[in-house]
Amino acid sequence: MSLSPFTPRRATIQPARPSIAGGRALLLTLIGAAGALAGVMGGCTNRGDAPHGPKSPPAIARAGVTRAGDRADVPRPATSPAPAPDRTSTSIRVEVRPLGSVPFDGLTLPLVACAPRQDSAEPDLWIATQHGATPPWPVLLADGTPGSRRVPANLRISAFRVVRGEGAMRAVAWERPLARGLILGRSADERGFLVEWPRADGSRWIGRVEWETGQLDWLVDDAGEAAFASLGPGGELAYSRRAAPGAPWELVVRARDGAADSERTLASPAGDPLVFPTFSADPARVYVLNMPGAGMGPGRMLAVDLPGDGRDLRVRAFADLNFEPSVGAAWQSVMCLATPWGPDAGTGLDSGLAFLSLETGSMAWMDGTTGRVLALARGTVGAAAWCASETSRGLMLGTAAELVFQPLGGTDTAGVPEFGPKAGVVRGSFVPRAGWFGTEGRCGIVLASPAVGGTSEEVGVFEVVSP
Image 1 (cartoon, rainbow, N blue to C red):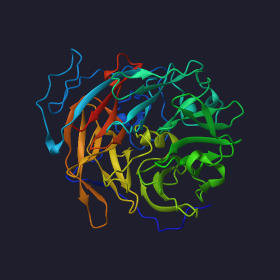
Image 2: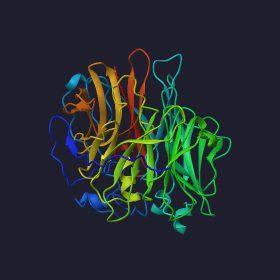
Image 3: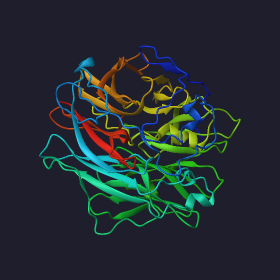
Image 4: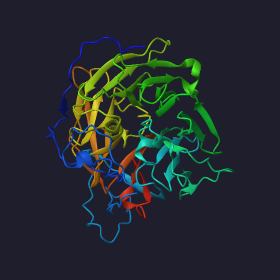
């Protein structure tokens, strides 16, 4: 099925209020993917070639963590700067909880899912992580070459759990370890996390691993290639599929549990790849990156509506992203984004999606109804929704120096969110990985911090919670 006809219009990146200078030459690499982002670290934001990954996990600079408010005191390495004064800017006050460290491949951030509890205002946490070896770029980008089927033999996937009331994070002991040859996917929910299996015959499958048991169920096991999968807030599954290497990637969306008979597809009429689909908090909309061939125009973010009556997928809006398109560039745009994006829980952020702009080297916000793109606070990488109260809602954003909060100030006449100035929350290098909204007005954000892991092969896990 083709993209619905609509008049092309270029959505320029507009600064959120207050104005933010664009065209930044620095792209922060909080997860140690310096090799992947080398093309933009020096300001070359128009490169379209695939990134060149590190042969081994790169060294990660250590950074200190200080508290915000008076709710917690997180230990800092001896070389960290002195603590900043307590701050409650923009009505933000949080409790910071160090949860421990998990193994890390130097590139792939852990997946985090929240499991609500009836006996607690806060959910249990599940964490899946990949370690032991770093997948090569042909595997990560599913480029169809022989190298795309060669997963390192010593790559492992493990799970951890944080149970409320038990304190420390603990490893999950499955009866059988996961089979070799799998790589960690992009998405997790309370039932399990996604994995992908590049197979020797050239096909690529998508599966889900149950948290408790480690049981692997194949959701997509076709003869072609299936990759870049994302779960929706209602358990929907979206992924990219092509019949054979060199064929164009199309968007595939299935209902809860990935049932094949619920499948709907969307393909570009020009044969352009549609890659890295990502759900918003709205289960009726998915975002996907459209990467035309060299010289055929810029990359685009498409907002695709999913009619509830089973009708065809429809492009609702799109935004030109102003960089030379490639699957590698698409990977960079979503590398730090946890998926699904949600839940909304009254934050007012279900109308769009945050992503990493390769034009500004910072996070940006695309409104899914109008296609407008707003530049968020400069130097930010990764985002999660926060809603502690009606006056304390917006986005938590990571930077190389601190976690910041950018409040939602309302919407304009077109219903597009308006963001206020950022406020520092916690010092340290953090990437938001998941947000949760509990009972009794409680909410929290789970953070990954490669800079405060014990080594370059560990990543620190923290939680920021409303008091």
